[in-house]
Length: 482
Image (cartoon, rainbow, N blue to C red):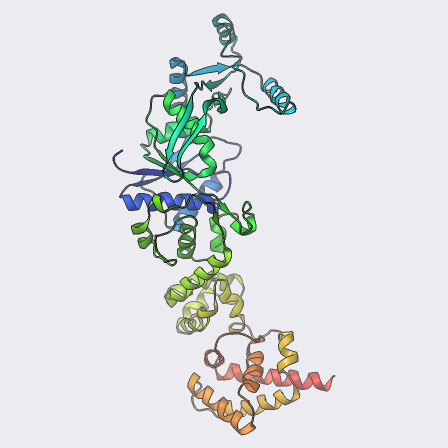
């Protein structure tokens, strides 16, 4: 077959969802592994369902994933004349025929077959018309569709993933390849494009196997060599049902908005049905390219486990350079109303410390805004369970003594803060937890978070003392009014 050439051919009728993204990734990895070409085709012949906006979304999604294509994209809407030439070839060879049957008549026959619980097949009424009848219909300009003639026998192909697959041709209808408005339908356009784009391998979801049988018949009718086919497994939810929007998100760009790193998403979807052949789970794109092969794709349906994606994303966050991480979390901090571009740029060293102490606890990029909110705003409510457990007249007394110690502390850093707290607890005869928990609640409004002394150093002496004073005042006023 020569140089490997593969393609991804999304329809711009909706966002690029995770199933199409995985098919694109598998094609891209295979092309890069084989030193071949990865091509992009936009199947936009259905004007009523296609939109410029969705085409842009497809481009943006592939670019975000890092899946670069090697030639200019092909748009099917610009190739209608090409498809019509192939329809004419099929008519001339006798491998296709005109069908003047009215849509309403065909629908009625389908309903009759359904009521009798038999499979509806086209009865070849127009194929069996006399030549005079066909001539009169042509001369009358009566609109017609074009159907391909399916001969007897079987359609067989050796799938590179699922093995030899066959279907009796009696189960394949004489399907329409061109509508009555002259526009070629999906299966014919795919065959023509794949042939003219010199596609060597078609790697797509196994829900396309039915189309493959039809397309092989078109290849045969045109005396063309079909590409090799590889049908990858479906992606199911954890309950093994079809993916819901919540599980699969509505598109690749949604994962970006939800706070996932593109490297994690690529790594995750690569493992949906494929394995590198060892126990590795976290891999770079280059490592995936080296290891990728169609033989390592499991034909069994893959399960989308969002918990695993969250874990993997956390691994990528922890491994990410802190300077890069600041830019990744920047839009989420700004969208949450916590800061501005100018503030972040002017406080870069502070931001480096901010991401450093939070990254171990974050699984999503959005977690930095959610878990680190108290670093940017000082007006927050205290967590209710923490109030009942850690705020009391006794803890207010401890916090007052802690304020005195902090005020006199020479260097406000992690080491001195920890030493000072432990020394004070020794004087008071209490366990460190008796002061650590009220302090955390006072400073953050929460009972959980990064190491206390790290966050205190980042907040700074003045801010810590102001928040501790506010907590003492809150406790004392609350118990006076009780």
